[in-house]
Image (cartoon, rainbow, N blue to C red; front, side, top):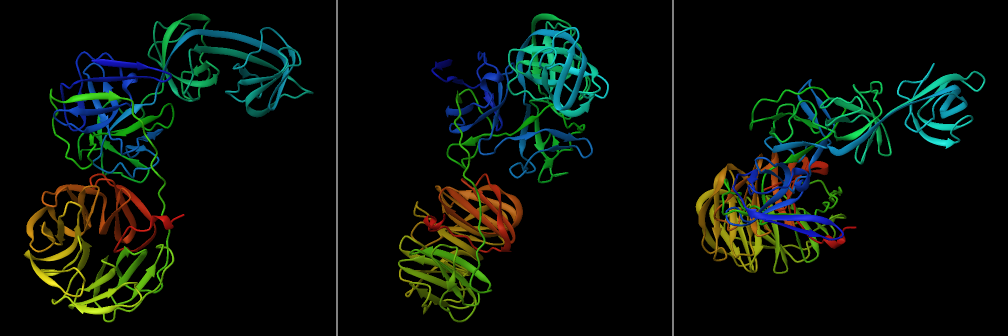
Length: 613
């Protein structure tokens, strides 16, 4: 069924049952009569049945087969204006979101209109000259001068044409030309011939000089059907063309009719509507090669730097509940809706470098009571209310400090080589207590309780950080990090394998579970209704809605991901020894980011956004 609504803005909506589909496409109803031009860029969403909640935009539509290729709204499409046959690459502005393995579909940026007459006229200026961008006509011969005429004569630069009228139309008239030059002079004028070979279109909107154009249908005026021409000039709704790029103007004859004009096309021999994959070979920040199969050989391209531009769309369904697995096959129970898509630009991203008050191996940072507190392995601490200006805090005494957390009015630090624990209400004065066991690598506060973990099976928990009780992990492992969730579940991850654990009774007992792969898992965080974990030394990541069942995801680059935190709708991960970071709304799709400095980034925390200007 098709619903139309017409107001000051004209748009359509369509809804029906799908015929089939997969992770990148959907075959819509066989009786749908719309075209790609109608549906291009519109949102398509599965409203019920198999795949409910999946959505994207119409990146391509085969109106014969009724197959919609679905674009990912979270990734901005790229525009390319050139290809290279030297290394079979497509040039773009930024490949950051188009990592190797990303499925894409490419479409030409075309303008389709109607040509309804061709005009051939000649004007002879028996005495004239060009000075700069000005044509000065002393004496006219036969014909009438018009804007768009291509000028020829002794010393005139090839491709020179009239762009506008300054004054007059005959003897003594003055005109503007497109190319500054000197041809003839007031003392020694020359004969100049102006020739019009114009094609009148219903619209030239979006067209550009140098763009390729093809005429089809009932052609006229000496124009050949299906031949590629190149636009040489545009004036209002009239154009001139050449048979070769930057060639001489093609001579038309005077005629009228109606033929279709399609400006723009694909580059480098690529095929519109064909699915490709970005591959690792020849990948750079501003170009990549593509294959017709995942991980396949590069498609052979030709060098083309003119004539058109192409839009490169990242394809694949996304889900309104981010992170929900995409179904592999759609069926006739999948009911879809095609509707206008409203999109907003992402907020600007920036980072600012600040300086801690001393050089130390700073290991962790937390936020609470209006303050950021960071501690070092050697026992130093630093305090900041904004995260920008830092002052020296109190000494924790001793070394081996590994982590710090805030809760119940206290900052609490744990030690990885001893049972020592420190507490402070302000980061300036620290008091001592003991956890009763040697060595904790991580501590977190949630649901009125501090919980600390380390290597082995011991778990320490306390409501006040002075009196500690102990529980047992389900296995002896190198436990790296833990977090608490709004669903009442604690999750801990271990490095060097696929081991994780969860607790639903506030840390008193723990059950084992597994992460989706073996890795040096380094950090875990909760936000947006899910746990998200990252790993050191790889591109491995994972997310879970309940802490029990985990789903694999991939970071934008394999590097030393050391920590992840959530705040204001984003997970933020940092990597040690680099200037690399990544952000994600859902833990599934990540965007590569750059920090303002390279450092041994070991921890990240969210707090006090009001302090930022």
